[in-house]
Amino acid sequence: MAQNLTAEQTPLVADLSEPATDSRLADVRVGVVTFPGTLDDRDAARAVEIAGGTAVPLWYADKDLNGVDAVILPGGFSYGDYLRAGAIARFAPLMDRIVDAANAREGMPVLGICNGFQVLTEAHLLPGSMIKNEQLKFICRDQALRVENTDTAWTGRFEQGQTIVVPLKNQDGQYVADQRTLDELEAEHRVVFRYAGGNPNGSRNDIAGITNARGNVVGLMPHPEHAVEPGFGADLSGSGPVQMRQGTDGLDVFVSALEHLLR
Image (cartoon, one colour):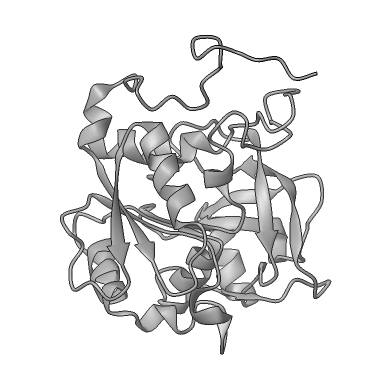
């Protein structure tokens, strides 16, 4: 029989009324872009808010970035993934502003998650490309990742070699590149996340996420925004056993960027 709890007894999940550890984080404005077919924009915005920042919705047809300090391209199926995943979204009006901001002297931090990673490769902010998973099937599961690079705008809170677990869900998640590009990524320490405990989609060198040479642009296939909130996260954690849906390893991706922008 279900137990009736009073309002005071009911546990709060991700109580956003609680102030962030550093109140200055709220001054950091992170734009979250919505394309036609985007699915995870609200999840990414909520991750920013839980991390302590201010999420700013951006529409693909906007002409400017509305004064944001960083940008997230969330997951989904922009334009239905027609032609290639991310190929049409790359030509959205707002992408020109994002490319300019990422390549500017200040180097705006940009994070592409899943479909957002695909858009970043199509926009040539990151090298390589994404193709169908080698099994030719959609994959959805909690996925262990090894953190390979903590020097980017989005990974400063992690430790080198740390294992985290976040959800993975994609069908065009196989990262490919020519051998020269792969050698450059490895030599320049630009692989940010690598699949651990097995490669789910055939990505070259077990690559789950990469960065540009400056470290301000990061793309990854798994979804850290789905592992930020107890009760709605992963069933596993790199730090040890957790109860069902209690894994929040992805939160530090967003906190890292906020703290980076305060420096």
